Image: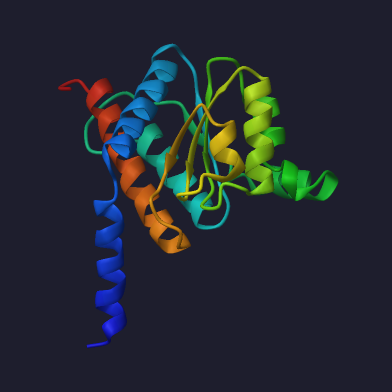
Length: 191
């Protein structure tokens, strides 16, 4: 068997083991912030690049659809999916503004921007976070261990205890599934 298989699995297991009490409390606080916004009629907007863009869509699917329980649909939109808006803004303004223009157009006080960036320094994600904060929105971030500039801008930041992009993304997936479970339980009929 190729030793790389065991190495990659062992690396992920070790990274999961580093999710300490602080990381777990952050997940609980993020879920609470999102539930509060959704209960009061707010919306959640999610953004990221590359694999984090796929994660943004995944999160929107879990919340607008369902995760594991039947419950009402929740207002969550991935800002990564409208190719006409993304290409128009990228062409007419800059790629740095592809998310911030959408936040400016759609976001309101009481909404939450959920921003994913493994480095915490993606210019377009940072621009969206700044626009959201200026609009009175809360900002939730998911980053790598360092947090980057996004970690400093966010109201709450889950810092995945890893440096390698693939491990950070795998920890983000675990983290947002935990958050979706808490939200599902809260809003479900049998919760």
